[in-house]
Image 1 (tube, helix red, strand yellow):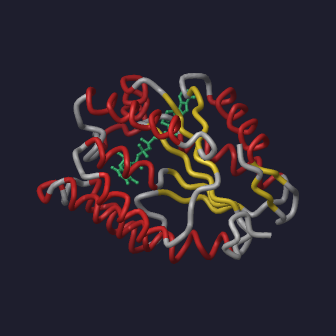
Image 2: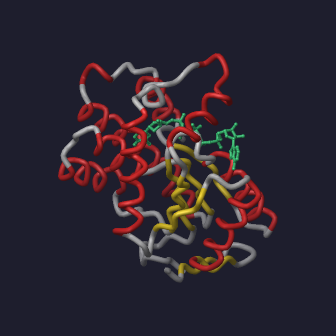
Length: 227
Ligand code: T5A
C-alpha cells in the first residue's frame, strides 16, 4: 500500500541537523534496528548517494563552486538530489525499502537559505529535484553548534574542515535556528531530538519517534500513520 498514493511501498526517513550532530551514527543504529526486524534498508547521504551525485559532492565540499556564489551551489545540490532521487531513492521506495538519508531537502533550505538564496528559487529547485517524492519522517538532531563542530573536528582528524564546516560559528548557530523553524512549521513531518545526549539515548528517542509516527511491520508492509 502506498503511503502517499504514488504507487510506492517504502518509507523515506531523512536525518538533518548541524555538523557533527550524529546523523551517520544514528542512521547506522536505526538501520540495524530495522534490519533486525527483517526490513530492507537503504542507507544513503546527500550530497551523494549515486556516482553522479558523489562527483558533485566532491566539487561542493572541496569548495570548488564557492566562487560562483550560493545560488550556484544551490543549483548543484539540486542537480545531485535529482540524480539521487531518480536513480536510487525512487526505485528503492518502489521496492519497499526503508531509505535512510543523511541530509536531504531541509539542508538546502537551511544552508543555502541562510546564505541568502531566495526561498522561491529553493522551493522551485526542490520541486524539480523531488518529482513528487517526499520524506515520511524527518529527524532533526539538535545540538549547539560548538559541540557539534568539536565532535566533527575530533572525527575528521587531519582532513580539516570542509567548505561548510569552516564557516563562522554564528552561521552554524543560524542554521540550527533555521532547522528548528522548519520543525515548528512542519510538525507532522519533523521530530526534533536532543543530540547532546549519549548515542544510546539518542537512538532510543529516534526509535520512539519512528514507532509513534510510522507503523513498523516485519517484512515489507509499511503504513505511514502521521504524527
Ligand atoms: N549541505 C548539504 C548543504 O549546504 N546543502 C545541502 O543541500 C546538503 C545536502 C555535507 C555538507 O554539505 C552541506 C551540509 C554539510 O556541511 P558531510 O560531510 O556530509 O557534509 O557532513 P555532515 O552531514 O555535517 O555530517 P558529519 O559527518 O559532519 O556529522 P554527522 O553524521 O552528523 O555525525 P557523526 O555521526 O559522524 O558523528 C560525529 C562524531 O561524533 C561522535 C561520532 O562517533 C563521531 O566521531 N558522536 C557522538 N559523540 C558523543 N555523543 C553522541 N551522541 C555522538 N554521536 C556521534
